[in-house]
Length: 79
Image (cartoon, rainbow, N blue to C red; front, side):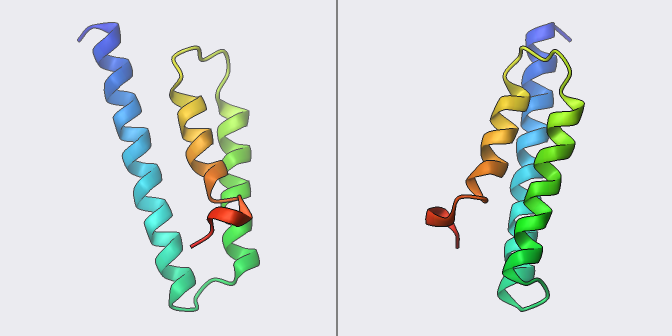
């Protein structure tokens, strides 16, 4: 597998996981399992974990994942 293919594959996995978790968190919020505050804390914790593990990544994968998480922290974009 080439470096470009490996990066693309890793990016696809990261983005699909992000989308799945976002959907799960959103559903748990809608059915009342999570409060607004709990939902925000989940995304804040995920962002912190991502930032702590990114290292010297220059592929753009971590940046894209951060943008997805940050989108859920913006009050104007909340579901």
